[in-house]
Amino acid sequence: MRLFDAHDHLQNYPSDAAEAAAMAAASAAGVSGMLCCGTGPDDWGRVLELSGRYPGVVPAFGLHPWFGAEEGWLGRLEEFLRRVPGACVGEIGLDGVKGVAGQEADFCAQLELARQFARPAAIHCVKSWGRMLELLNAAELPCFMLHAYGGSPELVKAFAELGGYFSFGGELKDPKREKLRAALAAVPPERLLFETESPEGDEPGWRSGPAGVAEVVEIAAAALGRGAEDLAELSAGNAERFLSGKR
Ligand SMILES: [Zn+2]
Image 1 (cartoon, rainbow, N blue to C red):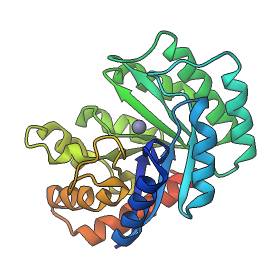
Image 2 (tube, rainbow, N blue to C red):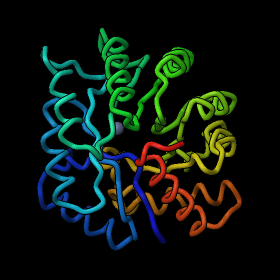
Image 3 (tube, helix red, strand yellow):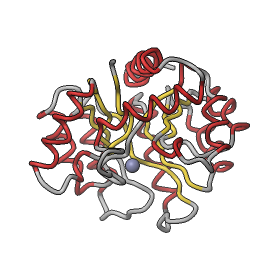
């Protein structure tokens, strides 16, 4: 099975040993690649280093809506994007619960960089779906990923038309998340991605690092009534297309 973890934070493992163990398990599970998302200037260097250490780790650089940064961060982000041609922009976004003041201006400035550099963007969105749609409509990106998609099934079509990919994680397993599974079913198959958000929420035997994307794919496959191998292959191909900046 060929698997791609569309969203994780490898840089947040507490030690080199924990990170190496997670990567060995991922490799044994068939995870051939992942998008490792930075969250601010303090971790971009580490994200870049990890992408050099492990084949298949694609870096993303961005300022997360939960965090502020010192003046000059946008210029530094531009430098990272210039220096690493294969990098995505992320994790960026809007958060209606935990976002810092100024998050929308920061998000828009980063969308503009993604547009200028023609890079795919990895986007976080919590309770800001209407505004997100307006901003992405204006941003004219080649493509973007809504990570841990939590919007309504009805909004899927509008985001897809703007170049949206949709990534789903372990929340699909929650019996109470009927609406989430309806959103999953509404996504055009060629825009489906799966993720772990590791190491956040890693638990023994479940969401165990990037390897856990295998179980996410199995759960999604069962919800969609299709084979897990087939869905893994489809989403790995989608990830390649996303990373190359194509819809
Ligand atoms: Zn994240």
